[in-house]
Amino acid sequence: MSPVNPFQYRDGVLHCEQVDLSEIAQRAGTPCYVYSRAGILERFRAYDEGLGEIPHLVCYAVKANSNLAVLALLAQAGAGFDIVSGGELYRVLQAGALASRVVFSGVGKTAEEIEYALAEGIHSFNAESEEEIRLIDALAARRGVNARVALRINPDIPAETHPYVATGTREHKFGMDAAQAPAIWQRAQRLRNISLEGLSCHIGSQLLDPAPILAAADVMLELVRCLRQAGYAVRTLDLGGGLGVAYRPGERTPDIARFAAQLARKVAGADLFLILEPGRSIVAEAGVLLTRVLYRKRTDSKEFVVADAAMNDLIRPALYQSHHEIWPVRLSTRPEILADVVGPVCETGDYLARDRRLANVLPGDLLAVATAGAYAFVAASNYNSRLRPPEVLVEGDRWRIVRARESYQDLIRGETV
Image (tube, rainbow, N blue to C red):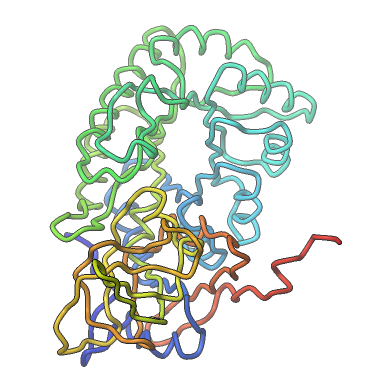
């Protein structure tokens, strides 16, 4: 059963849970990100409960949405966290999470970041190379601690997704060749300040078909068996994230609970502690970007809707040519139009939608850019010296600003003449 969409029309007005989005726009201004607490928690719990009695930890991928309120909400619900930088570790700790529930992934960890993670006592590192393992060992020795490490394996399984977010074949920079794992394990276990915990993998993001992830699980379980037959103690298996969400009409978001239960059945009896690292599938559908129409503009060949949200606020359409549904906050009986929805940034690539059938909106009307809870604000910038928008969290019939809109003073903080 798929989670409920927290954004619904009531009396012709779009609501997030029980809150009228036009109320948020009036008081918080636009552009503005809005997240549903219930939507986030429902999706996290679908993973956690779907894994059943299998010993596990669902580590939310912080890179999807790193707002402190979102992180605190998930920490209180029992989530662990998957980080890829020292800054993400800092955010997680500031949100009140335990370092012991953090796994550190990423292909380019610096010595400073590793030292920070060791000092805080994180759960484990997903090591991407033998060189990284040796660095972790040396830094752990300097501190007189033992670092838990999992080998990130590249299972060489292609994922049907955008090439920028595919990570699981030999042409990608991530992980180690599975065939080399026994030899790397043998050498790594000689290091005095490393405790080899297990294996990890992640084949890519935005997968609407879970089959490649399940296939990767089979590859990893076979590797676990091979390593155990060689006498190596493999205790944990991290199968990453990657489950996608429906961005376009006609697409279908995979059933999270069903997927988690399938993984649980595969791992059952293997005597493994299972770690998952979902991000997008927890927060994407729980967020929208509110924007107000500034102008309508027509040329000989095209109609434009100029909005106050731009590529600096939401770069996914420009970067990935991604599709986001665009809903009117207030329904209208006017006939639809065919138009490009564009922003104020001085780039032809500054658009939210191209050649899109959408509501016949007028200047002053509000639009909601859907499925904007993941990889949206986290990639926002100050390009054109634009202020990054506020973020709002809705809880039932209440809402609060959980990140204030930036000011002009924020733009130049840290700069000198």
